[in-house]
Length: 456
Ligand code: MG
Image (cartoon, rainbow, N blue to C red; front, top):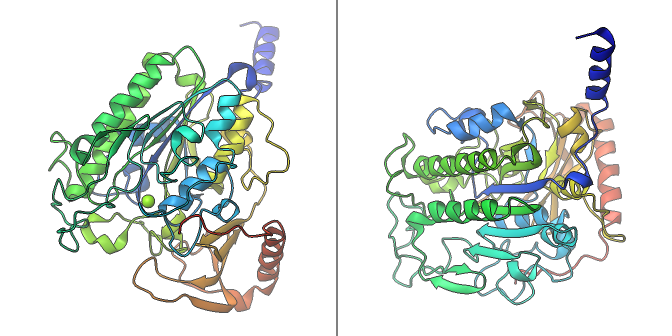
């Protein structure tokens, strides 16, 4: 190549703009349920084989420090779809998650990611678990999704009256133990849902949606039912993994991810589709072998220790996202502003969003400035991360500890030196605590008045 042409080519490459509105990239969010930080091959699992997710990570950006928006299902999903801490939408409370007899749900006034993208011409689908309300106004079809196929809440709800205690966490749960319905566009099509084939059927629906909409911008929110207990897998995956039924369920989920990415490649959509894989919260450790692993992180689902909220996360868009591993802190709250940026949508005024646009990190490899992360349990602020530091104001195990332990002064851990949160450095670093307290004050000033819980 002549030097001038080489120079022009280099300049063109350096000036490559962020993928922007004109291209209208598609968005696919694949969300596992209760998958732990240590449960994928690319996150160090010694026993569960995840070649598809490992390939996705090798081709994309894998996060070491990515957080869910809450420590349990319902508020975590509210955070993803609203881009806001669940205390802002009333999706946090004593009851922790929605139950079939809850009267509330995601308020109709919240502007979900699906609603925002729809306003920019996207076709939208929800496939899998919902868990943001079953009443009119809160259902997927009321919250911006053109299509919906899946379970209205967790697969361990609606238990049969004669179900023995502990059945949901068993290695061999009864197939008809739960009366949870499978709903397609508002209509119950199967009750109880046959859970053994759920992952396969969700995947078929997702593939159909991608193929049908290949010529227009789409948003697919694919929220798997597993590996939440009770655990089931298709016959092809039963008994395949070294990690029992938990590993079988995760390996089937891995297969599903591979199918989606293959379809995007086959339709020539891979370089115009941002795919993000993550989990709604950490592993349910009290389920024993039927719960996952938080790897080196402390505690699990239900707690604001790292194991409860730090989750696997991979962002994939070949040719646009430089492959690698990033230690940059990010959270599911960031997906909302990132997706709006990709779609060329200006966020609605007078609506506080808690995340930030990750496009400079994803597409230009830039570092992001420190941004505080707040860890809530219900409506209570338990901890705050700022840079490498994390302060705990209260701590409580996810399950089995009746009351929180209050810490005054707060516990302080350096997550770079001590990711397992073992060595409290509060007395050595009062300056850090002061900075954290200031971030908390600023955050609290934006929260008033606190809405009541929708979970009751
Ligand atoms: Mg969950």
